[in-house]
Image (cartoon, rainbow, N blue to C red; front, side, top):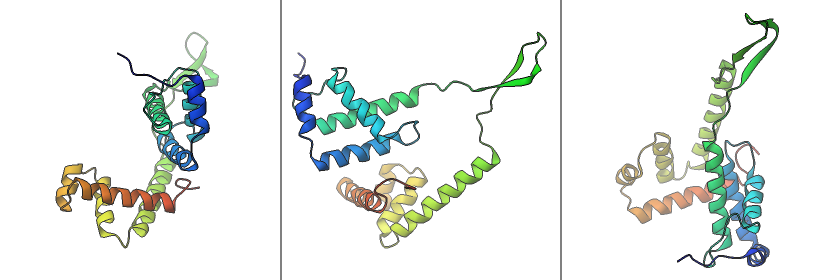
Length: 188
C-alpha cells in the first residue's frame, strides 16, 4: 500500500507556508550539496521545487516539505556527481593526422602546477581560518583534525571519551560556529 502524497495544490500551499527558518535551512543545504558542482544552491532548490510541483517527485503527506526538498536536492546533487564527464579534446587548427583531418588529442584532466599551488594555498587558508575559529574549543579542534585525517567516527568518540550524544553535541557546536562565521559559504 502506498503512502498518501501531496498533490500539486497541496504542495503549492505547503511551499507558501514555508517559514523564513525553513528557507534559510533550504539555502544552507543547497550550498552544501552544490559544492563542487556546476550549479548553485538556487539551481538545486529551484529544480527540487519544480519537480515537486510537476509531480515528478511526490512529498509524503506526513513529511515536512522542507525536509522533503532537502532530500530531493541531495538526490539531484548525487545524480549530477555520478554523471560521467566527457573527456575534453584538443583540436589542432594547423596540424593534421595521416588522413588530412585536424589532429585531435585528449585533453589532460590532471591539474597543472599552478592549479595545484592555488588549491594548496586555498586549503591552507581554510585550515588557518578553522584553527582560529576553534582556538578556544579544544574538543572541536581535535575533532576537526581527526576529520581531516579521515578518522572513523568510532575512533574519534573513543579518543575524546564521547558517547553518541556527546559526539553529536560537539558536531552541532562546530556546525553552528562555522555557519555563523561563514554564513554565505567560504570565500564570499
